Length: 413
Image (cartoon, rainbow, N blue to C red):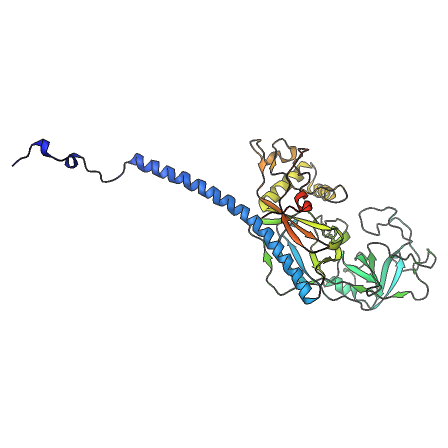
């Protein structure tokens, strides 16, 4: 029997639906993509921040490990920072080192400036202390030369164990004084001479008791004993590599002069406008810094994104409007001395900054990624992590006082 249409149920009267319309699917997909993009951006930002903070904590832990090793072993221990192969103005890895034994072989004599070894003090006009200029500080009548016989210094230099910026103590033992040395008069292109010469970075404390025209500063044979620090040895422990794309930017750091670049090989410079290949921090058995790094009070290491370091530096060098070598020398000069200013930008470099205009195509400015300051006290050996104070009141694209938080003790996570 056929039922009347009114007797059909409401459910039976509805059309069947087997899926979603194309418009509904597109709306859902669009929402998912938007949420995914927002999540990805947040994760990327968090990851970028974590890389830098993790690198700072890694360096802090590594230095604390070296300090603990020195105290436990009751002997000096340290850390060597390795320059990045692609950019020798930044550090990308580090390893533990053990300062080698001192060297005291042979007999030595203190002399005034007499590189010809003819017994007569030479006249002025030579950059004796290798500071890049000839002036009154290069007084040839002072005692500059340590002349050795049977010392094997030439061989030590050839083997890479003796280099500029190392120290010699005269006389040997606790009663002596340490002097930086350079090896300018050890010529590896010629056979080793019988008498070999090390040049002191600063004059010997005693000007001598013989006439100033005589190069031998002290009467009689004038022999002295000495001890020479040799290059530290890397310990058989796996080197520590910083997280990907994170570096210690030495141009933005406050570091010992012995690490600084030099075209004249002074204080461990490599002679090519880059940093010393021996970027070492040595802890004493008491847990304090020793050697060249102990004279600066505090050391501030600037930890930042590798891309930021490269782009900012290239833009700054281009803005100096000079050839590459001249620009590097200008930058090196700005990073040293009493009025030095570390190359650390504010959080955003304004588009109005002329040297950085190429970093911002739309003129809105260039945003710097996360960064940290790792601070090492030479007196206590303690290591702490701090934020960068990014204030740039002058508007020149360089932070006015980036180490303020580090110097006032405000820490960062």
